[in-house]
Image 1 (cartoon, rainbow, N blue to C red):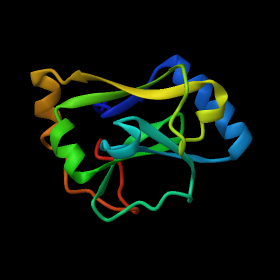
Image 2 (spheres, rainbow, N blue to C red):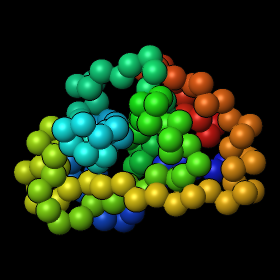
Image 3 (cartoon, helix red, strand yellow):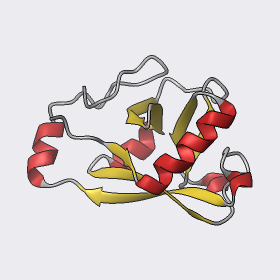
Image 4 (spheres, rainbow, N blue to C red):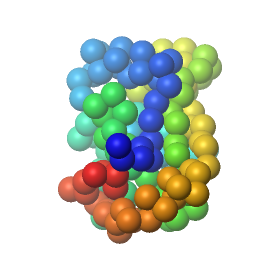
Amino acid sequence: MAIERVKATEAAVELIRKLRAAHGPLLFHQSGGCCDGSAPMCYPDGEFRIGQNDIRLGEVEGSPVYIGGRQFELWKHTQLVIDAVPGRGAGFSLEAPEGYRFLTRSRVFTEEEAAELAVADPATRGPEASPLTE
């Protein structure tokens, strides 16, 4: 079984399902700081432009998850866990009016997991990128 670079909690899965029912297919992009902190941002698929330096980490509940290349270099040793908690979400993210917000938790990969991931190509970038864990 391949190591997942990104996964979601049950609370996040429930919120993703609700948002997908209302908005159709979704896409996540892990924010790198700036205006919305470092929260995972949720958009209708096709309404956020993935750049050539963005890296596709994988999927959560059928929705692709991307991160900026520079941010990936800082976080590549961790598994990102998208969670949903009560609170006001970021203004640009779909969950903002729902009374919940997505946040990223992380866990450092074990030495064994890191060794397995070292085989993956961290240069898989851009909108047509396959997940790194294939």
